[in-house]
Length: 480
Image (cartoon, rainbow, N blue to C red):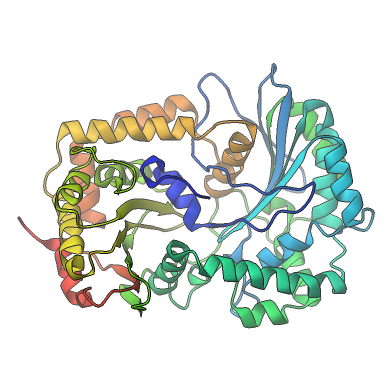
């Protein structure tokens, strides 16, 4: 998960806010992958839906010697209740502890013997299982994924052992200040709502989640119409469809089946609010500020990313150049106001968060840092230059395409797009949409979504110098 902030694209930022990567163990690895919504030029995505509602989508590369197949499930921590928060992530751990036909050791050995990798992650909206292998082993990979998803033992002894594992994982996450800040940002922006919950869940839930809770979650959410089986690399579409019919035809649909990309419930309400955790033993201030962003399906999704790229990213440890791309980067560098900052545009199926994450050890100048950062937000609603929009568009197009490095990233991109929007954009469409974004589009976006809008603030560390909420809020509508 560690990556230089200067190199992070908006989509990588989005991913980091929305994914928990559990521990690794022999024979099975779990990995992050980018959800960038694009295709490699010249390659098409084929899609088929089975009678039970399961969607199969592939991008076949005839000369590829490897392939990634995976199951994208439209269920994450957002599908839980306060009482069962943490269940989706708990299930992911147990999926690798054996099935009715395979012990944990047999599962690990089988993956190792074919030189493959089994990957998984849990997010606020999805649970994902992937297998990467040589193309001749795709059939075994699909069968293993089907076995894991349909026949996990959920052994009581394994459940008890995993409680301690997850608690240790939670302790590690709690040491990552950036993750803590963004979890609290979600909690305050969407307080009292499913999207505001953490992925791991509270400690008391981890200690009390029962086998019955796990079974209920599976029976409620692991439905064929809420799954997408994806494939990328050396796997022809018709081959994966045949494997799906063989191994997934028994998965039942929902009582009221849904189509990929359709609404799953009421849209979360963004609440202007703040949470502050002052801890003067932490020598730096960590501050995230956000307005309500856009969903994956929003027609202004790419405009939000261009606006985010104009604000930019900066890290004192990565560069001493006097000009660093964005105006805010140059200003912060010149006046040494921060250790780093990272703009972000995080999207979900029906809402999002657009904002900035600031880190500084200049704790007596926090008000200056926040003021000038939000002054840049205000500027976007008044004036932007053609050159900075073109630079941002070039960065965006480059990051979208470069993020699709390998079959795993492509397979995950297919799944994320189809499960959230119902379709996968082709490269020509992405190029066209991004290429047509103008300075006025950015200004219109900022006037509608940023200018004089309520904000959510999450702050941690030596934050005494952070001004009160209303003072910060006022900076979103400052003329200059």
